[in-house]
Image (cartoon, rainbow, N blue to C red):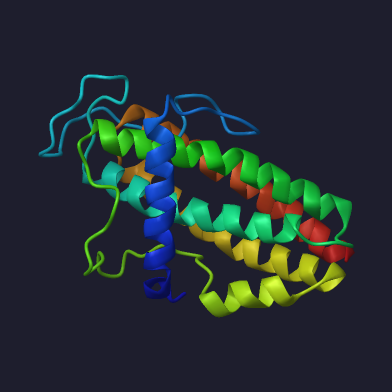
Amino acid sequence: MNTKKYLPLAATAVAGAIALAGCGSSGNSGTSPSMPDMHHGSSSASSAPSSGNTAGDHNSADTMFARMMIPHHAQAVEMSDIMLAKQDVPAAVIDLAERIKAAQGPEIEKMTGWLQSWNESATMSAGGHGGHGMEGMMTDADLQKLRDAQGTEAARLFLTQMIAHHEGAVSMARDETTHGTNPEAVQLSKDIVASQEKEIQEMKDLLAGL
């Protein structure tokens, strides 16, 4: 996917998440587990000092995981919002969109809080990070198609797009599970794999029934 187009939106999402995180402790809802959610591991490979809170030590994989997953989650929330504003969409698809939004919103706050506690920037450099991009991201054109679609057509497009989006998140999470060292971050990566693989199967079943 063309992730370069998404840096402005990602930056906006990150800024919003930082503002939310600054107002209080990050929460948890939906199918998202509690604190030990997004990253795992326990060694210090980062040059930034630990803040001493429960986030603990971390390495560059943990930092990259949070930096990429925040805008990735933000787009999933945006896609869900697009669907929730529509009429004549199957109830099961609306329910799924509500659950995705409820789970991923708090995870954005949680990861933003980690980056703050690690004294790490929430934004990526202009040059990006080589081929290690945000997998499964939709382009502006993809999102416009979703906005324009209605009824069953919108449901079918949402499911198709979100399956690809989830598959990208699962791939990124598996990288964190393998290479991360922060216990909470690694745990969250495992939780993302489990919950989103389950939702992928659910979406495939819904798609087959449309």
